[in-house]
Amino acid sequence: MKRFALPMICLMLPACAATSVPWTNPDVPKEEWSRDYSGCRRYADRDVGWRDDDRDTGSVFRDYDRHQAKKRYDAVLAACMIDRGYVPISRKKE
Image (tube, rainbow, N blue to C red; front, side, top):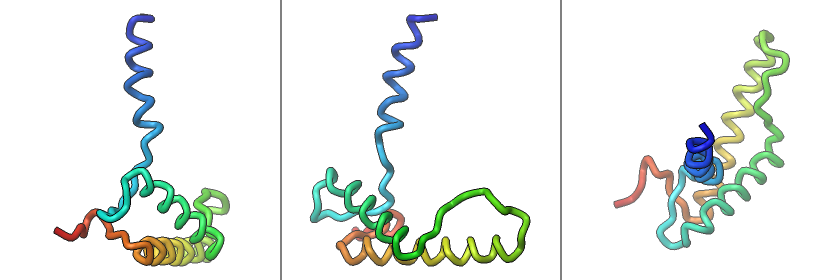
């Protein structure tokens, strides 16, 4: 059993450490993508103040407010990344 524990841990570590960045910029080294994405996420969080939590579910007004805040957060995040020269990976320029 112990023989399998070490290989499993080694396989799982890269998955935990790797941050998926759904944006690309050919002019910036890949090592910087994660920092830019994190910076834009922090900026959007400060600007919108939205946090994904499960408290107060069941309230129609709370759900609507959360939905609107999430849309605003996503828009601010996207604008920040676009301002830095990134393109969403799903719409990558060829």
